[in-house]
Amino acid sequence: MSRKRTGKAAGKQGRRLVSNPRRLAGQQPDPYAVRGAQPGPAVCKECHAIYEKKRWRFDEPASVKLVSQKRTKAVICPACVKVHDRYPDGVLTLRWPGLPEHRRDVLGLLHNEAARAQEVNPLERIMKIEDDGKELRVFTTNTKLAQRMGREMERAFKGKTSYHWAHRDKLVRVNWEREEG
Image (cartoon, rainbow, N blue to C red; front, side, top):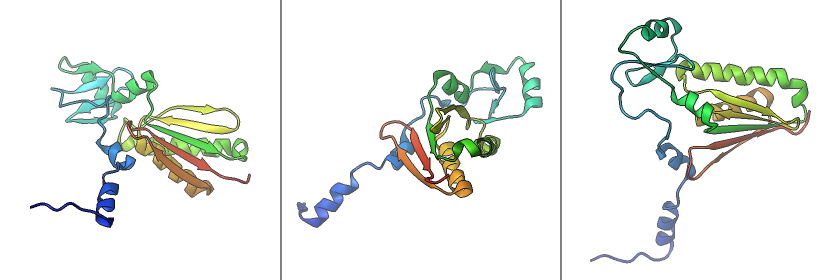
């Protein structure tokens, strides 16, 4: 015999069913990800990243050697495809009246963080940077990179960072703001 829940318990249960965008983002399949293991190694035609044993990595001498072998496939990696399709997974927006004076330092920090991330995963990249004078927008191929850049901006230049995840896509919008110059 089953009992019908009423009152507070039913309300709590109903709230648990509401989707959490953070939880959903991890479950959404990346349409650009390589599905299944490819037989043999592959080298990206654009960036020369190597796909081997279900992992992407950078190794320029190894990629030159692999390209000369017949069993190696020439492909375009998911990050290069995202850049061509203009399909970012992360957008970092920086708003700060003092940004023009600190532009060089800010860009250096962002590029250093991207280089650090690329050492671990070559698919984490800055796609493009837009500057309209009032704000700086950084488009990334990965959600984690945009989040890390926002945290680094907060750590280095103070300010406030907020994160907004899309409900259906893997897109994250990270906003960093600082009031005074």
